[in-house]
Image 1 (cartoon, helix red, strand yellow):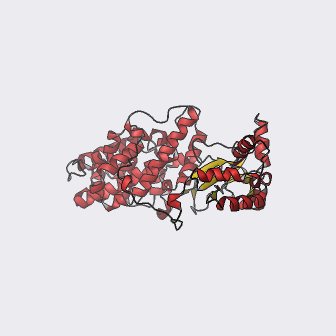
Image 2 (image 1 turned 180 degrees about the vertical axis):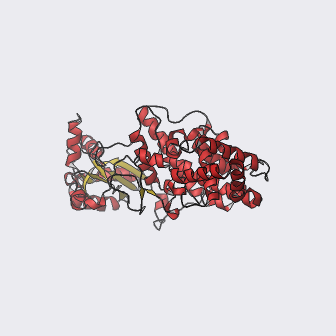
Image 3 (image 1 turned 45 degrees about the vertical axis):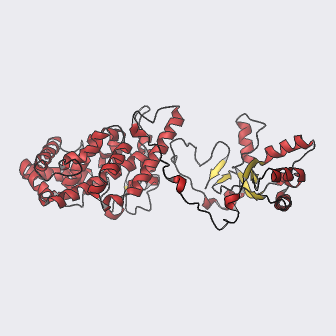
Amino acid sequence: MRALPISRTARRRFDVPEAPDPAVPAAGAVAIPSAPEARRFAANLPAARRIAFAVNAARKPGEASAQAGELAALELLHEIGHLVVIKAAEADPAASMAESATVVEAGLGVLPFGSLVSAVAYEFPDVAPSPVPDRIEELLLVRIANENPAARPLRALIDDDPLPRQERDLAMRALESYHADRTPLGPNGETLVDLLRAPARAHPTSLAGQLRYIRGLWGSFLGASLEELLDRLTLTLDVIAEEERGLHLRFGGGGFGDGPDHGEAPSYAGLDVEPERFSSDSAWMPRLVLIAKSTHVWLDQLSRRYSRPIRTLDAIPDQELDRLARLGITGLWLIGLWERSKASRRIKEWRGNPDAAASAYSLDDYRIADDLGGEAAWSDLRHRAWARGVRLASDMVPNHMGLDSRWVAEHPEWFLSTAEPPYPAYTFGGANLAEDGRMEI
């Protein structure tokens, strides 16, 4: 399986060098694996995000942006193209790329043909180690990708304009003519070249639509080879959908396009008969009736209801727990129990909200907050609630901590910092710092 090649021109323009070890990128640069066994870089979404970020950083305002999900989709289309070429040769040995290369060479002449295959190897360094038939195969698939209207924002990465244009176009015409006489392929009996172009013709504005087209129509044709890619295909479609939502949120609209290609309504058919799946807590979990309370808000409400200050967990009245039990509540989910970041509150004050509390998910430490009475108050509430058949629960999001948290100070190695945003609607400066002072691990 061969991955989408990145042109030498794009590597220079976007500062995307090759790295001798794909696991160790060059400092400050995007590393593209060059070894054949490690060339499926676009399936690696973090790498695809780094590449997309490098492309967007070099573009002028107003130019179409590159998206990681789209790059992964183009990568998959390229890999599937290789599968189609293999299937063509299996159906008709005369359709192999070795035979095709011979035909192209006869049509161009030895010297122009040699010039073309050398130019392919030079402009696309990943292709350089490949034999001549494989270079012709890459030429065909890269040309198909360049023709694809939906891939226009990414074309700079795989642009074949630096190749000798006359020889390139003559080679494509020779391939089209030769394969027109070969055994028909695919569900509609197309030629090899027409079959490779079919997804873009069916969905010219959407790489996601093209992948859905392949998933829906080419399963029996490609068989197990396509099944091996289905997990990546599904993940890529999910990432594209997330990016479209992010663009929509960032710009207040757009990012979805027109027509059915840009959305896929989920189907819930058959889920009504799906068996329940519970953990070892099945003795009580299926019958749990859970109520969620924002802890500080609830304590304020209780203070008003019982006409006295109720500030800590151990001060919650027995009468209130009795009331919950009478209502049939068997689980109390308390939100905002943990010790919060002081930096979070300070940042909110700087943003013009002097009365705001620190974010419940920008934490100093995962311990019961001091102003709620700490662990002793929590233990008191737990025993009283359990006496009434009410279990306690709380949520924990361990990748959310305050900038000044104990974890940040004592374990900075637990945190990841990247130079580019991991999602389209996510922004930060210098570190993964959200507006509420939250760090991400």
